[in-house]
Amino acid sequence: MILRDDLERREFNYLDERASKSKNSLGRDVFEDKCSFRTDYQRDRDRIIHSKAFRRLMHKTQVFLAPEGDHYRTRLTHTLEVAQVARTIAKTLNYNEDLTEAIALGHDLGHTPFGHNGEDVLNRIHPGGFRHNEQSLRIVERLECTSKRVGLNLTKEVRDGILNHRGEGIPITLEGQIVKISDRIAYINHDIDDAIRSNVITIDVLPTEDLDVLGHSHSERINNLISDLVTFSDGKDKISLSPDFNRALLHLRKYMFEHVYCSELVKREEDMNKVEVVITALYNYFIKHPDKLPELYREVALEDGNATAVKDYVSGMTDRYAISLYSDLFVPRGWTEFK
Image 1: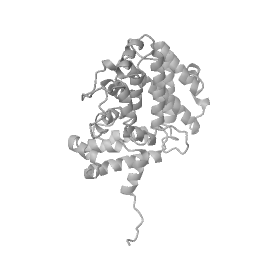
Image 2 (image 1 turned 90 degrees about the vertical axis):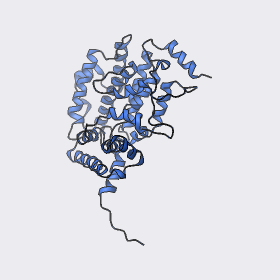
Image 3 (image 1 turned 45 degrees about the vertical axis):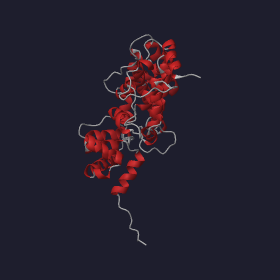
Image 4 (image 1 turned 30 degrees about the vertical axis):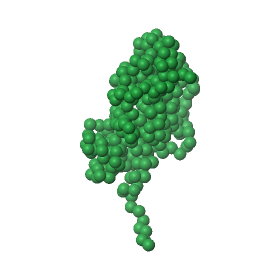
């Protein structure tokens, strides 16, 4: 039998000296007795996987709104691809896989319905704006509740990695830095795959100078980016791509923003207007009727105000739930005779 103490000793014996060791974690905000057979980072990973917010990612948009094909990415499959890329990097560099996986699995819990389009709408209409990384942190700290605790009570390292997976902030652990780059590696490449599948672009129009560096197929690019990252980062106190690979990836990302993410074929004005109508109508309705919020969010309203509670509720919805609720609240139904 292998117990937590054994696993913690293994981390010190086998992981790189720069790796985060679970026994040296900065800990949880609320004290808990240790698990007898899991490290703290393994426990965090399990709590995220079993959370309701994680399950909802299955029905949240990645790029394409309500895709009809079976093989388009959702926010959940994106999360799993990030986790796999990040784990491969962590394993190769001999860093802490459990911490890396926990951060990766939790990094996008705060995404809105309808992907970044929904985020843009909430950012405009909610006082103080909206950023999905901050909402991901709020979910694990406040909104995921059980009968025994408020929030998931995750370790500081996992919460820091979730918050700083995007933006200018630098994660305090190398494992968090791995996730930050893995997120970009994953979404640029799988979004290319989905964009080609949907006929928004063809492989022939992608910048040749970038593909010559990164690779001309999906698998080549993923493999080459991981290989470059681990080679360039090995033995260093920072996780980064080599200058050539970083330049090519950023240029390819710029191309994707110009020709896919902001493309009229993807962001059709009619669909964007519908997203704005749905998100805005739901937000405004619950601002006016906070008594109609579910119990959890009524409690949040008492603590943090109606606007925060409504933001929490609307941002946590799946695409289909938001559409269904909008229909229930605002779309007239045919009259049925009472009997």
